[in-house]
Length: 479
Image 1 (tube, rainbow, N blue to C red):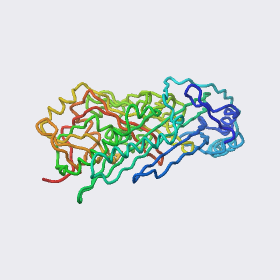
Image 2: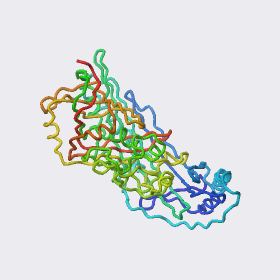
Image 3: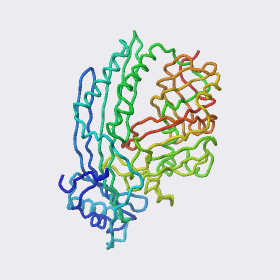
Image 4: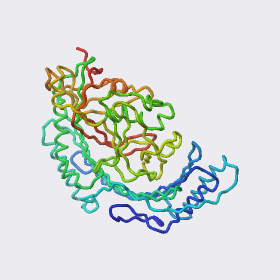
């Protein structure tokens, strides 16, 4: 694509000279506006889909483009193109400046913008770049995972393995006078199995991934994930139906952070809070959780799927304490929402691609570890439900009500793990659950995903320690 080229220099994406970004920004602001920025991107994805004992698809590509944005008051004008040449970008800048003109006095401005490169405060090293590994080798990895899952039990009926990689190189030029460059390598692999016996059909699912290269498979072999998914599906075939009712629930660190992400995290994104669509709106400085609870959003953790050097507005990656000892300290801000609250961006301005405007999004969101021994938490719980793996779910951010599926759970009997159960769901209210948690383990466990919001997907990870909720509604079979 003429005008936009990328090369790697010290692991940072560098979009080469040849585009006068300052000129574009000045044109975007000539009719007014609080600030303007340019987001230029080049991404090179590869997907391998293995199903029914064969490779179904191998998809690769290259996408480049850029968007120009002007923020004026509480409004945004945004336009994008995949023709990243100076004339095209000047045309975009003219288009967004005309949107601003309707609310201005009609006078044009002569603006001086001198851009300097912003230095990242964190860095990440990809030890085994995927582009240096042959596609045939990657196909071999998913083939071996398929074989590993099917070898677990004859009742495994179907195995699907998906491999995805994407190198994303971005440049952000901002009218505040800086340019920021980032290069992100996201790699994920997912194994999904279907087990069946008679009329009973169960599934197992296990993902791995992060901001890393092929070293992912040294740390978390895909065959191991395949075996885990297969054993989970087979075990659920003989599991009894979960009892229903109010009972203590222990969430294992292995369950990942689905609860914190859905029931709490989205409600702490500033755009939802400002629009009154969050149960936490207007509660900065108030106690919203038990004193044992500290919630952190941290984009600086090496290797995690939600990490980066700069967010998609050029703000450096940060570790943001959202809730400290139960007290709400701040929301997750991008630049626009920070302006509205007289705050500063927390580095949570994210977008799926150059085709989207940035919005506040989570990165790596977690409940911080506490002081309790995880094994002792279980021993001190005479009966209840132990959740080893969470499934999907949904939450109403306005009132905090949620419903989650449990993909792997066990009864707690006299402080020990009892028999496995299937079909369990967890129903409750996020703020109430946060206030009721009475034990927080010293461990931590991460899960990964792609978070959807406003039609955009962003790579994230979530984490939590072992947690005990003294009483929660468990859906299942009434006995």
